[in-house]
Image: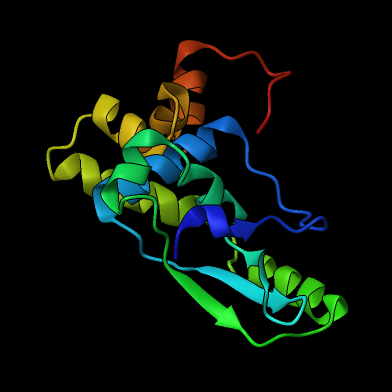
Length: 157
């Protein structure tokens, strides 16, 4: 569906910081559209409102992303429903995504480094700054190195 036929809702509590927006753009450019935008019909099916996927929709306005599909975006259309049901659907979509576990991310960083991906490239492609890559790659060894380097006794984990 042409992205310009969709409209944002006025209740989405989910916010994305600029690094996450850039990461979303990278994801779409490298992997394509892997998740559709969920919309609901209202006003007798005359209008389509975004229930989930607002940030994907915003990113679809970027010229590079837009050129992938000539301004079209993938959608899943919910049947017409009252606003309160659409609000609950938004919350469920947002909360069902979960969170990243730090040690699991450290394992993935180690695996990617072992495969030959540089720290700089990993940071760029995963939206991490250099310190985050270093800390995940370090897997907690900073405290051991710090003790050897002479952290004073006032410092604890």
